[in-house]
Length: 600
View 1 (cartoon, rainbow, N blue to C red):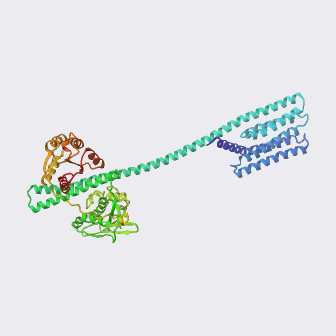
View 2 (cartoon, rainbow, N blue to C red):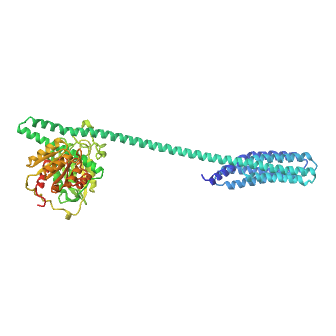
View 3 (cartoon, rainbow, N blue to C red):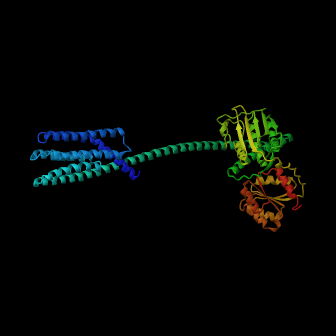
């Protein structure tokens, strides 16, 4: 608080002290004035004594009334006016005592004279203690009373009275000085008290604020701890689910391999190969979903947006999911829009969104269920809905279905597989393409409906359906160098290439790869990046430094699939960047392309 505010508080407190002590002063005035009137009743004309007494009693009564008004008014904002009124009352009382020094002083009666001086001196000392709170109050009382008494004594003119007048004046000055010091002590004490009160208030406010901050911090820590605990639990569940989902395909793959090793009959061998193909595809989808989530989280995914027909996207997604729906005994109802709805997006990613949602519908719908895949125009939006007759979603789980790794069922009670990232991936891909996705369910056992909305663009922007790219005819046999440090992977890739009629050679590290390339003179090199000794990027650079390798097709075949990895491969001199695992169909198409001479 500012010094001026403290001074105002001190003045208000000093004035309050004056009024609190005024009652005592009034009583003393009445008693002493009555005693003096009685003592001088026979020595001074009674009319004079009575007039003086009535004056003193009147002043006392007026001051008592002023005290009562002050207490009734609660004068917090009128300190100056109430202080002035009190000083006026003190001055009137002082004038009464000074007048008494003249009126109640009969000639040649030393006893009465001494009594009067003694009484006035006593009143001055009492007034000094009662009025010390404010300088104007005790000055207005002490100076008139003391100086008028000294003047009355000095008027007598003799040496004794002059000496008494001098002593009365000295007494008055001493009383004023002492009272002033007393006032300084009072003011300092009050100022210190207000400062301490302000300090205590500040400390209490700081303590209350600190307590509030501590409570907020405690709540935030508790909330964050709960969230971290939940996230840790979801992480553990995800890791357990991931292990489960990875083991599920590996088990049938292992048994299928055992069947092939045991020279199973042709029908069984065919079935074993089909099982292996489906399960490997499931593993690839799991890894691709995880990679997509990682790319989106790191903001590294690239979208190739173009005008797209919703009907064509629905057809592609339905064709992809139809075998799964049929195998589960479901009926898939596809209802494309009545007219062409053109949206702007990445074709592969939008098909991926629809496929992810359809896969959930297939997985979470009991046997012989129905799945509706529909689209329609609503205002300027293309609205795609996927509805099923499945197990539905409980109301408490509905707000969290889009959270990463969230699963509505406890991990050991799940009847279907999945990592809990399909809807998360779908929502992020939709929002990246200016769309919205919403999921609704009436509750457990009531089915689920997913609604996906995209802005409709101009119909004229619709592209012509892409013509089927003619597959080039098989060209000349190629000489293919496989550089891979994983022996099994290198062997299987070499067998697949040789099965397509091409000549192969293997190398398992960077140094051997450079030597083999110089000796084998390959047309194509499949180059792993993570190699012992010399990594794949360095191998590619050194190969490009050899004049005889200028015509060679170098394809980086690696598990590193980020955009930065593709850039580094291109900068190192690779013509292609392929992410493991490479499908047999993609391998065949690539080799057919390589078999066509450059520039043909």
